[in-house]
Image (cartoon, rainbow over all chains, first blue to last red; front, side, top):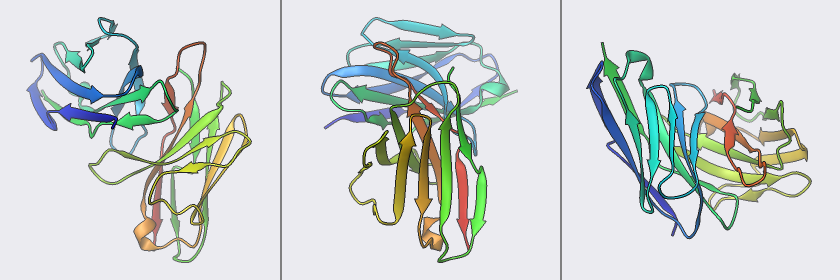
Length: 110
Length: 117
């Protein structure tokens, strides 16, 4: 069964304190792994797609990496405006569905 | 990134009435759209997948007669909550998939907060 597990559930960081969010997945043939950011009361905002193990993507203070079993979202020197829930999703080669994790709620304290 | 517009962003309706939510892909053609429901502090729960011109595929436990989905064109899908009850109050989010070659990202609308009183 296709499954996505994110950890930790919640993370509090001081401004400038770098850390990583984890997304572990099991899927029968990975088509893509996706990272989204969701602010309260808003729809998820697309951040990255990773397609194969070893791939990395970067955007400002965020860097996403992928292995055959998990993905990490590294946050370097975070700022308060990076506070949000970060969602990970996978899509299998067979079918259209996106399987979402439960998210990591990140709070960056000034 | 691609833009998906969802309307309305919030709606309050009386119990027993129906509510329609629209999801439009503004700058791309979406062959597949997804409808999700999200409870507070929880992740997205897939309700149904709709492909343009065909019937939606509903997830187990989702009543297709209560949540009517129409995907009439490549840029528009609608979700109608029929005979709404307070337990239908939730945050509903649509997403549209924009396959370009092998790319397959899904882009989300802003969400609709439905409150049934």
